[in-house]
Image 1 (tube, rainbow, N blue to C red):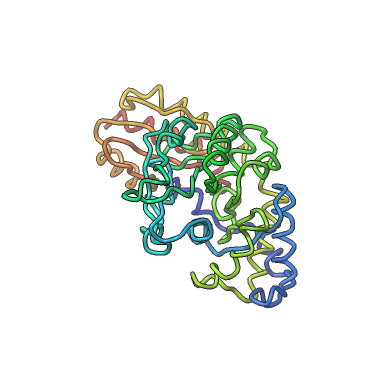
Image 2 (image 1 turned 60 degrees about the horizontal axis):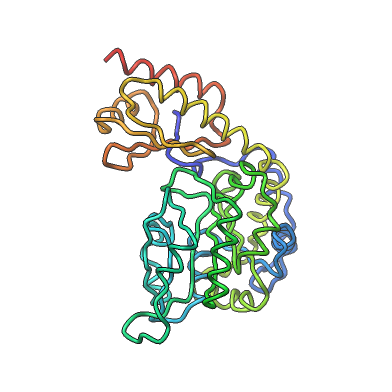
Length: 338
């Protein structure tokens, strides 16, 4: 079976399982789990942030950040493809009572000019008060696209001018850092809060860390508790995240190279009409009859994602090998013989 639906489908490696088994743990609700504390310290230090807190999922970390930044009846700004809007179960409205103003960006990325234009006048009481901007890097529905640092700085300037919070959904931020060579500390200088996920390209079973400035992070423990995210001996999973930082971070480049190679191969197939630009580990391509291709791949033990409207998605990951890559190419080529 070749599973390219997402980079969340990986299984812990032998080394990661050993790290989990040997972890020192305590009660994290009391902040007595030494492995969790070490992971939080490392992530905060890496991004130059004051504090960090471990969450079970990226969605919970994002939802916590939104709640920490906003009050009910307010509004956040994000791209129309943003994960916080599309894939977190309506949590923005359910958990925080906040609405979203959606912007039509490019591959999930928005500009400072778009943000400024979207801010509701604070003295116009018929509109919700704009208080937060949420960005995503890399962009999921945008095909793993990466923001450039200058755009972040320009959006930050707009946020400071209008006293808005700035949150980064960094579910695949590790991929962006490897692909661009950006310094994590530069992110910490720009964003008020950042979530970084360990259960995607980094290969852990679960875990996201939310880091940020002290003033905003003082609310994090309480909000996590309200959302049901208090955990006990979770150091076992924190050990997996530490192992991932030490062993799986730099190797993300392999996923990017395989994605680019596979994208080039797809672009030469006559039944593929378009392959979107590939910067990291996500490939989005277009075909005329996606259901026929999905069924064919399923028959050959390959699973991918159907995005609808003729768009299909592949995501390379640490369990996808060179042998899988060769087999995948052969299967895609054999479709021409049908």
